[in-house]
Length: 260
Image 1 (cartoon, one colour):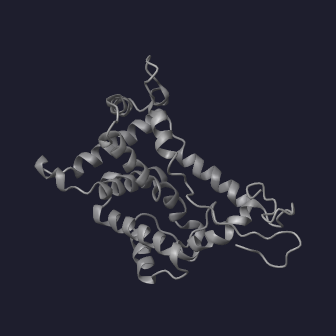
Image 2 (image 1 turned 90 degrees about the horizontal axis):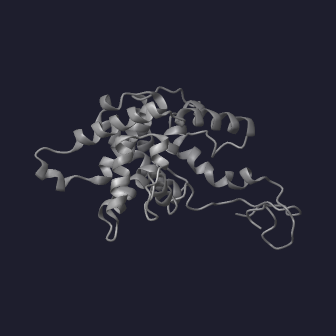
């Protein structure tokens, strides 16, 4: 009944606001915190349609672009691995995952050379996003100092004019980075270290890494137990949906005030 936008009180009355407006109230915390104006915070359908089209165009890549991105990611990881190799045990996998995914995201979204992006700058952006995102869930107030640090760091990536939220690079960066760095890290940990993980899973991903094409992404071997890279990606995404919780503001027909 909630999903269908029919009254939660079992009256059968429908809400006087649409599905997008139902979630708009809670997402305003992201507007206050990050100064964004994207498909999750704007209820204007024309703008939402244009934003989706623009974002889809950014991430629709052919096999050649995927090969380029793969090569760049390999170089980023290789550069980050300490020498001598004995120091690898002291690496922070979470920091590595944040840095690599953020650099690749900025390359895809804004055509920045990921090999030229400063590591300290990337970690400043990553830390600020993570802190402000967590803070926004618990309070209506967000630290001006943290927002200013994030804004200054982003200024090195792409200039935008305040208070024009539609030019804010975070409109796209948050969607590409905030959840997915964790997903990528968890996928690596599950496939590499989880007890019971099959060797073939690593081999499938290794084969895809060597030939990152759509055909290889979906290709399965002859055995019934063999999975594709697409299968692994879909499975790791399943427990980590884009929206972990959906908050809605209900305003039913016949009611004077809405209810959260």
